[in-house]
Figure 1 (spheres, rainbow, N blue to C red):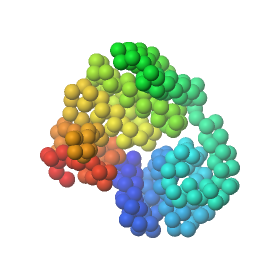
Figure 2 (cartoon, rainbow, N blue to C red):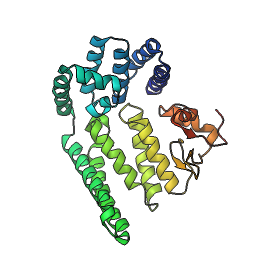
Figure 3 (cartoon, rainbow, N blue to C red):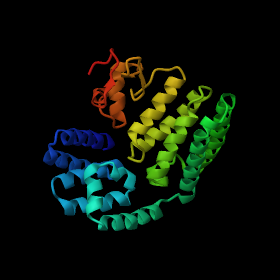
Figure 4 (cartoon, rainbow, N blue to C red):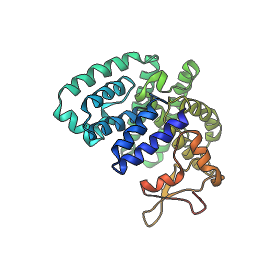
Length: 282
């Protein structure tokens, strides 16, 4: 169901970009029957409802989205929703009310807080980098990442992989950032990736973790470890400013691997201005 959900979701996004809003609405509503957990999905569904002047339905899914974790920051990125917030003061009150209900519904509050605090420490250390001498930077970051990883493992040992169902949307975003920083020293990255990847995939397949976030964590860790990437989510900029997707392992199977976790075909990346590998065949 998750794979089918993302197929419909990506098709709806494509229809929306072509301004085929009624057709997009139908695809979004079909996708909703498959999965009701993706928080970004609600932003796009609400936006299409507003585009079609269906304000009552937009308000209905506005509530549903918030109660499943869609944040004000996510909604504010959409211009139609942002305008709705400005023109309808009740949306702010509704958002605050439903957001409180959502936060209260998260099962593992202590673990959520721990991950959010870890992210704050992680960012604080990295924000200090410009004030610290070059020789001390890597050492300070490495020490912080090791301390963070110990606490991350404590969380996992207690509740399993901290996904959307367990710690909420904000905390899984924190977890993704922490994983990116943990799997970047080229020392034990392969072993740690082998530990985290199956857990991430299991959460993706139940709609509790973002497929693209998983692909970024996996591909970046593999590249840092000297391996080819797996999903084609990692790119580097060449001397002309082009963003080129780096080599992919067994590239003939990349679209199959992407489909398994709910990602669109690699050719979809061209819409984001990325240059595909020469050996990729759509």
